[in-house]
Length: 172
Image (cartoon, rainbow, N blue to C red; front, side, top):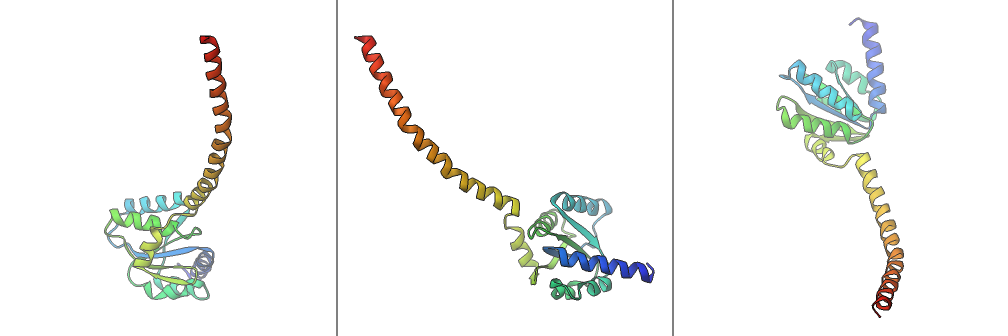
């Protein structure tokens, strides 16, 4: 990379750090190209992205962002996983790390909060934004279903009573 490319990369990475809800930093030494491509595709499907950046450039890009506290994590072969959804990057990274011991999660950042490896794991165990929305809709929908059932019950009871009288009249 020449100087202009580095400057452009740092600017792009800085904007990425500012726009991301969560940033996860991990070591990837020992992962094959196929495994990295698999990790990237899983992250892309979930709505996140994975980048490998030089540590020095990543530290420069972190300056002036909320995630500036994670600059000490950039040592060795590191990658950056990020997403706008606060849970996606942590969840996909944690799931991938379970099956591949070469991916070691070092920590990350969620807004101004700096997370260690355990913090990223705790964040990964939280439900995603879409799951929370589905639960909320389910909670709102349940009382409506119960109300409809209660309103229909008296009509059903009346129909059974009329049916019983009709059978009684037929038998007589």
